[in-house]
Image (tube, rainbow over all chains, first blue to last red; front, side, top):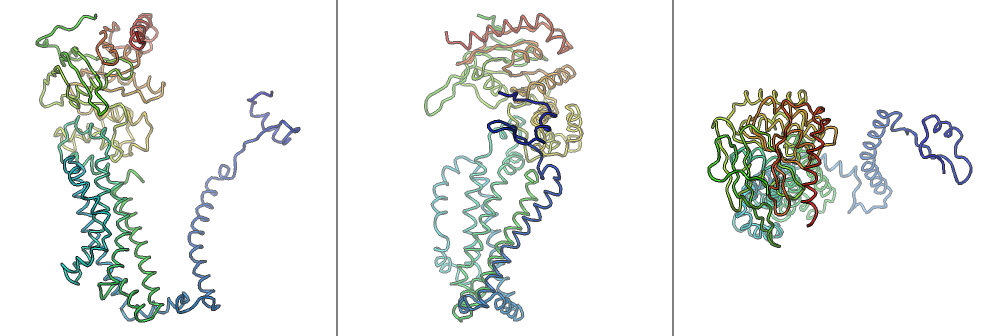
Length: 293
Length: 266
């Protein structure tokens, strides 16, 4: 049995000799690239990661373009990306595109803010008052599981074909997700934080503002982010059947008219809106929870 | 049986009078007697240590003193001398500083609750943070600093309201041994300079001997006061001197034998 610990010199000398006779030898642990050049290593890694994040979607689109140009893909179903880009330009030139994006965005933003913010306020109250929570939780869970698109006909019946029914649909969709997350977040705030508040005689309002809200905020914002995705999904569904403008309508109408390029313009734009919405919310999260940066 | 403080009306130099206090926690499975028949006085300006094995109810007793729990039986009376000052402030065992507030705003928070103006609260916060060697970290968030610093924030937060009574629940328990010694010395200095009444929960005999004027040794399940020991060391205390003194060793052994009896099933 060799000594387990050797001084620095003996490690490096054996290192030079490499692994000794079979059955024995030294395992040498040395600094790697990440240790000898930490800044360069981090920079190269960052560049590589950004590079692949961009290269993969670009390569997929290029492949699509190649297959479409080679005639492998049926152009009636899968028009080439360049064809889609051309019709995109046409739609922009005619103003139809802007109108569609604006119509959808307005419904999404209005519904999202209405539903989301109401849910945060109600959730804070319901989450902090035990009796309310116990009384309302079963009802809220039951209503949450109803697919909101299923009540679109009811909304149309009550509010007609105008904007109200679509905004309310988005609002309801966001409302329940945010509400459930907020109630959960508020009731889950660690009692040790409330103990601090109680021990220094904080008022109900101070407790809510300085303790409950910030403690629950990360989870509330998670709920808001999930809701943002759902808002985009549900508005497209509503616009398929009950709108004469908007990106959902554009997709649906292009199918009716047999213009698949336009369908793709709509589909890609919807996805881009979803991505942008998500980024905005990440920014909001960054601003509102500086301690988690 | 240890000598009990006399019953009835508390004497004038008594800050907290605990009389035959009991606490039962009812859970679904049954009930746990956490405290039973606790009678104890905390005197004006004294540093009282509650010492006992874990699970002996010392934290529960402190929480009753802090008004965070109500007793199941008996009474607890506290004298509030100066209505313009806070009666009590608590340093909790776990890091109960708010991660969403900067270190300065953590200390400001209780001050604002007691009606101190914001500018004054800021001055006070910076003063107490400096006292606890946290100058320069005022704008940092607690999660970016070490555990020892977080606990110093919690201590600064309690001291800043200058309470008549400081309630500390194993404030140093989560720290490593060296840091613990340093903070004990810090607490000793601060207390000697400020002389609030302190109730200090600990499971460390050394800590209790070093800091306390008296040590209330508790027994476990249900928690009772087993004995109250007067600590003979003069103030101001020099931690190194005290640890080296023969009295310290004798007292430590005495308390340890007492505690060991409590821990071993009869």
